Image 1 (cartoon, helix red, strand yellow):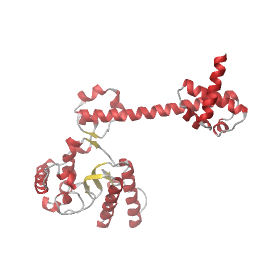
Image 2 (tube, helix red, strand yellow):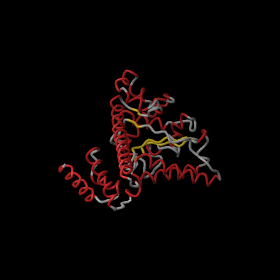
Image 3 (cartoon, rainbow, N blue to C red):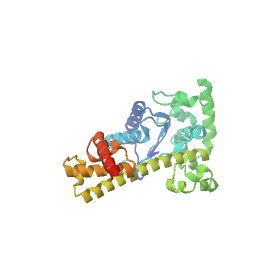
Image 4 (cartoon, helix red, strand yellow):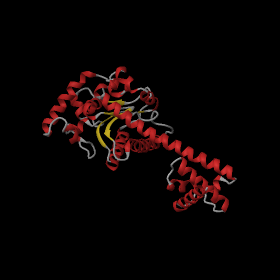
Length: 312
């Protein structure tokens, strides 16, 4: 979900809308992003898609930056066009895909931009018309969505229309655009067993799905966080060890990392290599990168110190 700054318009005319759609379609094809549903409103946009190999961030950054630059040039304005970062919700496909397709495509009708389903069929600025065959593009996942209703196109369109009609009376549905963790899980009784995991996710976690789905997303996120923290802690430990030994041996840390090869620096480098290998379990290749020599030199330095230690 993308909104204009201070809820101001992000489309002033059809040229703006055409530019946005053109950019979105080209980027979708280029990045392998599969767009399922979309709707352009006066001051906001809704998109539903499977992110491609490059991920959501790169797609959205290129789409919004390119559009904003062109919009500002054309309308002779400066500054931010969009309100903060886009709002993204990760959704469970089996449970919510069709619900979200319907919710997004009914946006123009809910906002009274169009007055009937017949008008919505011909509304150019959403994916609904593409699904019912009133428009065409090369990048929307039309077949994929229709196959959720029936394998034959005619029947699929008919069932899709019936599904849309059933959704008209539902109005705005906060549960489909908030996606808070507690609501998605089904209440505090489902959240509490997760313990501290919930605190890490924050109060506005945008995950829309069953309890099992949300828990799995949290587990995946925590794995990434732990990997990052381990890498961050290890980098800090390496830096501290190098700094401490350089100070003790009376050599400059910067010069040592640059590969200075005097006897004094070589001695300090050997002690650092030995410490990082034996005390922290750092690979020899990584030690070599950190202190400016080749891996074979690190292996030799460690071997020499191990030999000296054994003699003692």
